Amino acid sequence: MVGRDFDGTISKQSSNNNRGASGQGAEEAKLFASEGAKVVATDVQFELLEDVVKEIKANGGDAIAIKHNVTSADDWKMVVETAVKEFEKVDILVNNAGITGLITQTIEDLDEPTWDKILDINTKGPYLGIKAVLPEMKKVGGGSIVNISSLSGINGVGNAAYNSSKGGLRLLTKNVALDYGKYNIRVNSVHPGTIETPMIEMFTSNKEVREMTLAGIPLNVLGQSLDIAYGVLYLASDESKFVTGIELIIDGGSILH
Image (cartoon, rainbow, N blue to C red; front, side, top):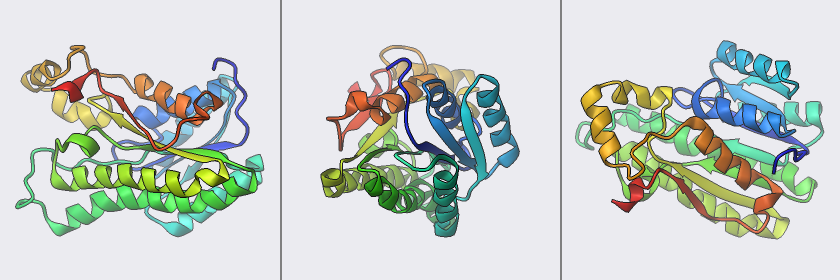
């Protein structure tokens, strides 16, 4: 995989806690660029995003930054049009947007606006992104879509809105993989466990919470954003050309409990 030249563009789109401007999204953008990808990085926090793109360019990579609300179909249309204008085609999409809400919150305490916001960003955003890129991928004879779900999309840890949004994304992945395999478009989901990102640090900065978290991970370490980025890189590359509709779990063994 080292040195592979990816044709086309990658959208590292995200918003709020898990974003293209920081955490997993930023690591993915930098790793893909180092492997020769032309990166279209998007985020609602444009200044932070620009810093990531500047770093990519300083290291010899090719990337552009776009301010982007993933819950807007018009924004998605603009992002795809810009990507095609800049790089001629789109053949990779990474849906990386995500927010959690309060992990310990029960459904009785979960208000409707919070439910709507989490589902909009975590599930509707990828739905809109997939719809936006499919016509372009069909034009070029294929592509790879990688949806960042969560371990919570499988085993139900966390609040009901987050679980539902990530579980929904998991099954959306399988549906699109089934429908669009005939176009040589592969669709897979990645399911991180506890990764040291800004989204998680608000919990694990507490010593007791951190120790409790580590106790649930057989490898006894928290994951790093780069651990996820390498998994995403595999699914986006030709090395996984016979892989579609799967759940790639990267969690240090947490799911074994």
